[in-house]
Amino acid sequence: QVQLVQSGAEVKKPGASVKVSCRASGYTFNTYAVHWVRQAPGQRLEWMGWINGGDGGTKYSQKFQGRVTITRDTSASTAYMEVSSLRSEDTAVYYCASASYGTALDYWGQGTLVTVSS
Amino acid sequence: DVQMTQSPSTLSVSVGDRVTITCRASQSISSWLAWYQQKPGQAPTLLIYDVSNLESGVPSRFSGSGSGTEFTLTISSLQPDDFATYHCLQYSSNMYTFGQGTKLEI
Image (cartoon, rainbow over all chains, first blue to last red):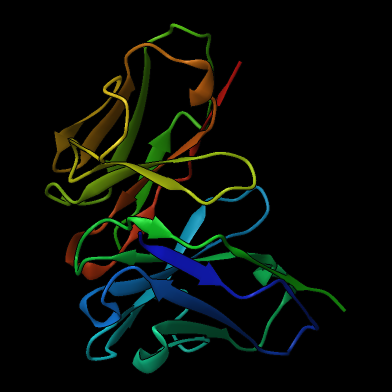
């Protein structure tokens, strides 16, 4: 069965960067997209961007363009999402999710809590 | 980017109630709309995709309708397991946007 397993919780200081991983199993990694979504405490889900598992092409929400980088390692069936210049407002649970290209997000990782605090 | 306005933000309901949640898009998204259920401390789970297609394993009391800019999730008879937060997601033009969520409360 399809599984997405994310890396563990992180605590970072303002201005630092964080990189979260998402290891996929149960499907052919390069035939699906991996998306990243975050949810700050009490807030709506926010779509951040996605990466084409095949050719590595990316697309970002305008809000995160320039501060978020999504990459993948096909040999490890793993996608990564890095946020730079962290601020307190980036404290959130970050999720990865898989989808066929241009379709709804179907399988989700368990979420990774990133806390930004001085 | 397409903006999604979901209403209401909170709904006080009882078991057996018929529940309707609405999402409005700032521009036409054709049929590129999904609904998710999220329980506290858990990742969202897909209920409905492409407006009205029920994901495998989802009870038939859930249904979706709409097109263009206005969409509806209906729960025909609310069950105890349905108390959760519901989110809509649009995915037109390979850019995605969520609604602000609707929390069902007793």
